[in-house]
Image 1 (cartoon, helix red, strand yellow):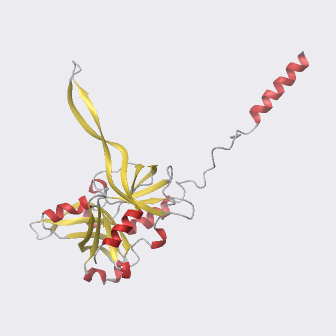
Image 2 (cartoon, helix red, strand yellow):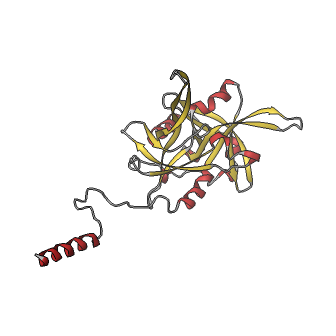
Image 3 (cartoon, helix red, strand yellow):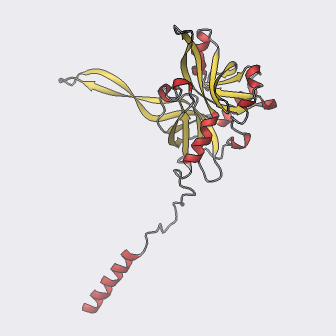
Length: 272
């Protein structure tokens, strides 16, 4: 009996000494660690992001104040024309006030604001396509500031659970004092059902509308879409008698986005 007891104890100890494995192999191993390399990707992304603004009231010294509207990002359209992609609701205030839109861009000669025309809007998906005016298009300093076609997602990178970067200007941060320094946020694709939009598990705030969504995978980083809004929730407050007194909105942490496929269709419909 003692021998059998010792053998059982030895087998038990050996079982704990073995590395843990998933016997049925239902879970695949991660093909990359998302946080590795984010610094390099963020440095490149900052060059492709622009702040959408329009001029406000002039100050006493004759300078314009600038009204921040949201985020945009730069891509090359047909005939190598530079385009800025953002949301319809971002450009709407300027249109309602009959103001000219500008995009703030970092160039090799410093920060500039380029005036733009609205070439197309898709009201159902909240997409707007902007075209910098010709004098801005002709400037060499605007070259090499846009996403290349090789980075456009064909639908294969929109995978639930994949890590993404979301650069932009939440709460108008990153455009103070005539600089262009977008805030980099991180999230994951939370839900995609094959439609023209998807959900992110990632905080987006006012000002992130128009932020590009850049999916991370080893040697296969892709532009998969654009942030259009965040999902609001609410907190109910009750008095001492458990009567509802007010409801306060708060950010649920889920962001709604349109796919790159939908954006490319909007670009095809644009007149420029």
